[in-house]
Image (cartoon, rainbow, N blue to C red; front, side, top):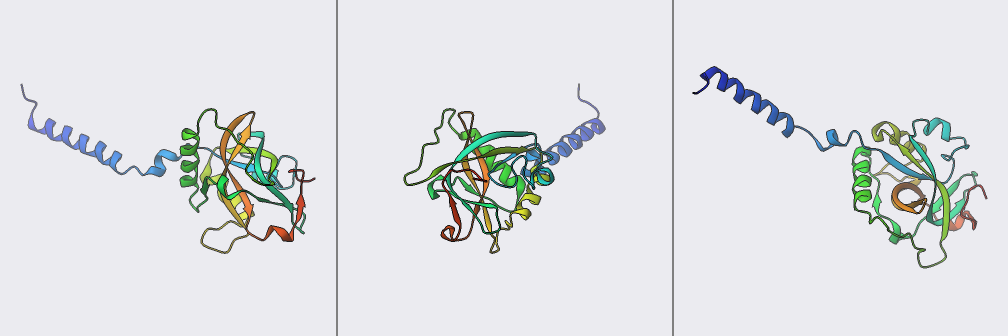
Length: 194
């Protein structure tokens, strides 16, 4: 037996409204619950002057390492240089897109990936992997602190590199210097402060 015409029309409207809800869902809507992680090697580390202000929302802080060369700038804070071949991605002005890029790289990272020393005189850099629960809230203030603004002549770039935490490789965002490193004091120990 066929349902009355009015009930069929209602059912059709209900189906159309559900379909349009799904069709109007943006990629950002599905990414709102993603986390974002940065590799901190300077003033964002625990116990330093920018940690409490910018990292109070962190849900995880773990000792970590990556490969690079560490310098101290005349102002007294550090700057990092990394091997070009170790750059996995470049940061954008869209925190949700950057969180999605990180999540995608984490998903596709082999379970036992290695973080071999690059060719040349690169050091193991010691820092912290800091994970935040809300990329939209937590990343922009750190970008502003570091002077990172895509499309402008900024002091730091935000790139993604492999960080190592307890033997596991985790892609993480890190801020690297955009100036000539030869003008700064080299820190051969891979730690700041040295």
